[in-house]
Amino acid sequence: MSSEVYGLFFFGLLTVMVGVYLLLGYRNLIRIMLGVEVISKGTTMILLGAGLYQGRPDFIQVLIVTFIIVEAILAAVMLGIVIISHKIHVTLDIRRQSKLKG
Amino acid sequence: MGTILLLLLVFLLVLAMGLARDLLKAAIALALASVFLATILFLHGAWVAAVFELSVCSGLITVLFVSTISLTKDSDQKEEAKLTGYLLPAFLLFFIGVDCLALRWLGPFFLDAKAMVPADTLTGGFSKVFWGDRTTDVLGQAALILSGVFAILSLFKRKAQHHSLEGGKHE
Image (cartoon, rainbow over all chains, first blue to last red; front, side):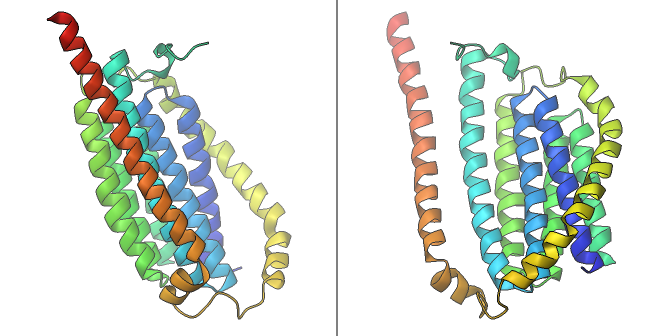
C-alpha cells in the first residue's frame, strides 16, 4: 500500500472518529449536524483511498458523487428540522427538547 | 507528500471546527476543509467528484449552515459543553492509537480485497460507469432529491399552517 493510500485511510478513519466524538459530546443541534458533516468528510477520504488502492478512479468517483448528493440532501432536511425545532422549543439544546419523550 | 500535507490540513481544520466556540467560525472551517478535500480529489484524477465537493459541500452546505445559524442566533450557542472541547486533545491521542491498531489489523484484509476484484471491471470513463453500470444509483439519487424537496416543503408548510392557526386564535 502506498503512503498516499495509507494516509487517506489513516486520516479518513481519524476524521470519522473525531466526528463521532463531536456527535456524542455536543448538545447543540447545529454542532451535531457539523459532526455528521465531519463523518462524511472522513468517509469521502476512505472511499478515495479504496478507489486508489483498487486502481478504479472512475468507479469510486461515481460513488463519491452519489455520496455527496446524499450528504447535501441530508444536510438540507436536517437543518430544516433544526429551524422548525428551534421555533417550537426556542433552544437548540437537545437535552431540553423533551416534547418527543414517551 | 503533497497529499499527506493536504490531508493533515483537512484534519487540522476539522479539529479547529470542533474546538471553535463560534458556530459561524466552525461552519467556515468546515467549508475550508471541503476546499482542501476537493483539491485532494482533483490531484488524484477524480475531477467530477472534486467539482461536486467544491460546489456542493463547501458552497451549498455552508450556505445552509450559515442561514440556519443566522435564523437561530438568539439561542444558547456559546453555552455549549466546554468539557467536550477540553477533552478533545486527550481523546485524539486515543483515536490515533486505535487508528494505527485498526490499520495494522486490517492490512491483510486489504491485500485479500485487491485479489478478489478482477481488474477489468467498472472502468471506461466516468460517464460510462455513471450512466451505464450504476443506473440504479442515478434513479436512487433522483428519488432522494425528490423526497428531500417534499420533506422541506412539508416541514415549512406545517409551520405556515401553525402560524395561521395561532393568528386565528388571537383574533
